[in-house]
Length: 310
Image (cartoon, rainbow, N blue to C red; front, top):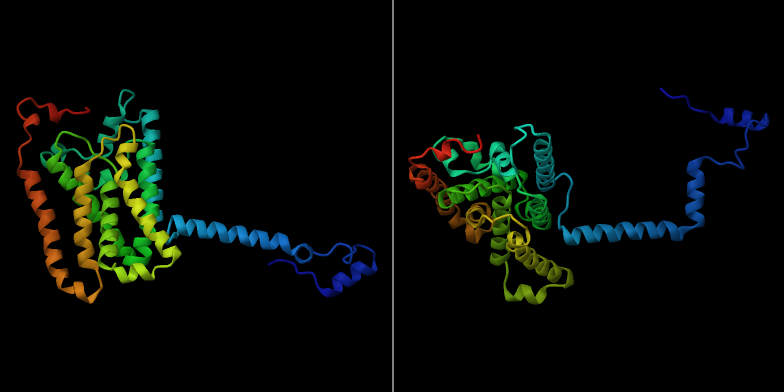
C-alpha cells in the first residue's frame, strides 16, 4: 500500500515554507500546461502516429501483433537465429557444413522420409531457411498478404493455422515425390497456400461492376495484391543460391485452392465443399502412397543415401 498525501499535508507544507506548489506544480499538471500552451506539438505527434498507422495498414493490411501470422513469422526468425548459433558454435560438429546442418535440423529429403520413415520432415522444413534473404522475402510476403487473409477473409485463427499446415505438408509431399535428390527448406509452400486462398477469394468475388465502384484505397489494395503476387513468384530469382523448389510452391498452391473451396462461406460455393474436401484428402493421400512406393534409383545399390551427412 502506498502513502497518499492529503490536502492538509500540502496546506501545512505551504504554511511552513517547505514547498512552493504554486511555482512548481506537479508533473502531470506541468505536462498539461505545456500541451495547452503548445497545441501544435501535440497535434504533430498525433499526425505522425496516424501517418505511421496508415502506412503500416497500407503495406501490411490487417496488421496485428496478436495474429497467427505475426507469431508464425516471429517463430521463423527465431529459428533462423538458432540455426546460425548452431552453425557457428559447431553444436553438431565443427566440420558440419550448412547443408548438413539443415539436414540434421529436419530438411526435406525424400530417402529419409520414404525409406527411413522420418515423417517429421514433411513439416519441419517449413520452419527452416537456407539464408537470410530466403527468410526475409518469406516474412515480407507473409506480412503483405497473411494478415489480410487471416483477419479479413478466413477470420479464424484455427482455420488459418490449418491452411498453413496443409499447404506446408502438401508442398513437401509433392516436392519429395518429384525432387528426390535435393534437400528442401522454407515456408514458401505455406505462403503459396495463403496466396492461393487470397487469389481464389479475389477472383470469385470480382466482377466489372465492382471494378467500376472501387475507390482509390481499394484500387491501391488491388494493385498491392498483384504486386505481392509478382514479388513472391520472383522470390527465388532474387535470392542468391536459394535453388527455388518449384514443386513445393506448386504443391502448396494447389492445396490452398482446395482449402479455399472447403472454407468458403458463400452459398454459391456450398456445393463444392464436400467434393473439394474429398479431392484434398485424395490428393494428399495419393501423394503419400506414391512417395512410399516409388523407387529412388540414385540411392539404390551403393548405400550412399544411408550415410549422408554422418
